[in-house]
Length: 617
Image (cartoon, rainbow, N blue to C red; front, side):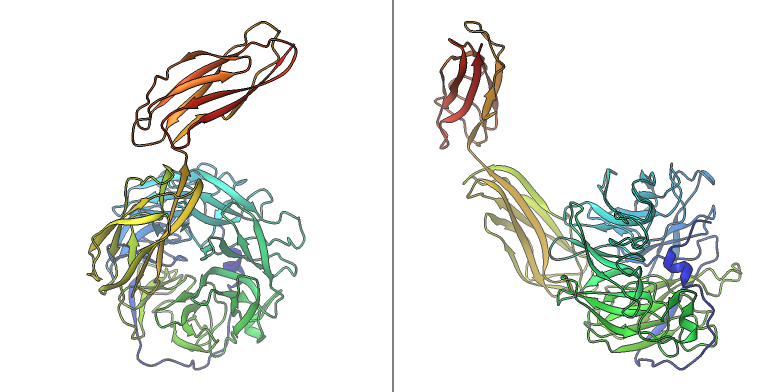
């Protein structure tokens, strides 16, 4: 079997205490499904709700070959195995083995995920799978890029690419941050422990995933390393520049795991598996002390411990991140502790932004045990999750785990999905208007979407809009945008939707570059030293008409010891077309010679000029 993540290994402890939990009223817990090995087992992954309303996830083991599955399950508990890993057999498993994380549904409708093991190099894979179960292996890690992709899974960022972490591997073998395109082109952005052991000041072994913040950067955690060796919170730019924001010191937490979530106040919220203010015997396992924490950290790195678990009443060992629900509170799970006997199989809890925690459910083994994955709030308002162990299947003596739902009375809500993560208009002539690009907006939620406004930034305009004041469930509409640059150079903007969805406002990044109506490239050319009175080889220049109208009145001249030797240009040039001009150098004396290639025409940027330089010898 593949290796467990560090946080999972250290959280397998024996607990021997029972106590009544504080339980919230008006809640309904439902055990939807018990795994039986044949359809998967031991899910450490949460669930993702697809555009079709169903839930998708992975099981770490089990399936047809024993190395994990990808599955789909309805809200009422009907499960379909979409794919079983290691179809070619161990140890090669070219299609991967042991998926730790739930797949993410991309804007193209396909799901993208990772396996912790297998692949052509045995270090894990990135895969794509359709809703029908057709799997494509996009990339096999080679260990120096990263090894054992983390349980946080992939994030599709605003640039359309996917970002994630690996627990091991990279240049220094202590984990990595990576980017991968939808086509499978992978780039390692940062390898941890760059400054070396023993403490790894930049952190080591990231077990959680990344969250892209409103500032465009990515934020995450490492299990270990940092100034005190107990893990870190970091920020990393899309280009790979990493900043350590906080090093845990045991009293404020130890081994932060799971993916953090950014709240409306701009801060990030997360959990640590160990550490905190409470030290009962049940929360001590060798070097690990404390029952775990919930923390808040600002983008600048100021950390506040919101809650320290105590095992007795509220659980211990929170192994998964938090979900920010529509009521403004955070919901999560602990792997152990709770109210049910000495074994205490874990809990589901909620916690306010101010730190008031309520235990909502204590697992009893038959309904699940050891919840190690982040919860999902579905569009019907209820929460859905998985447990690593427990369940009622008679075919699985190893307690293969469950899928459950928990309703706490929150209302159904709409969900906005876009057909693209961004719009790029490329080059456009200053003051000209581009062709329109369209975003399809779909309400994949469970309630009507009420649209307050759709706005766009300067240099961009909405040219067409089929979205009204409301958008019914499962319906879509389209917004078309044009680009009219007013200045030269790169320009950015945002198409913004304000509505009643929980994540409102939603933004689609826009980009384009303002260019001249006509350009002559290169803008400067240097000739090799040339014997006086002889003619050099020609250098070629390109005249480009960037306009949507014909460029007319073209006249080409040179000065100095330079001459046009050939050209495909005439007195006119069609819209969006190019022609070439070849220029030679014939020095009249020794020394340096400046000159110019000049093109006069009907463009507002006329004349276009390229500087020429050569040396006579």
